[in-house]
Amino acid sequence: MIRKFGFVAATVLLSIGQANAQEASVGKDIFDQYCATCHGHDAMGAGPLTELMTEKPSDLTMLAANNTAEPGVFPMLHVIHVIDGRTGLRAHGGPMPTYGEIFSAEVEDEMENYGAVLETRGRILSLALYLESLQR
Image (cartoon, rainbow, N blue to C red):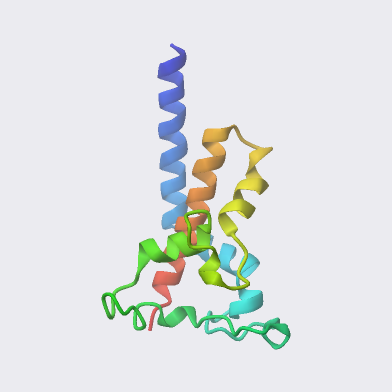
């Protein structure tokens, strides 16, 4: 009975996370809250903090165009890894925060471990999907 409930709860949470990840507004809201300060609301790398930074933030609208492995293809997995930062690619070696840790810390107290993992991954996926929609 407990196993069955756990499976049903996980399925519901996963489907909610997938629905949220597919909403463009979710990714945009996350971007506006966490990323626009450095990358700008247009994601072109000219946010209000750039004048205080030693490294200019990337133009996130050119990720597909600048993809050397597959020119013109949005590097989804790479983008997810950079945003997450816990997978070995520590924020592309620069000053960018590790958002996997930040998102996880924000939801850990509110949810059980599995729910916190799903919420964190959903936020990262939503943000990556939003960035994919901005490509020029």
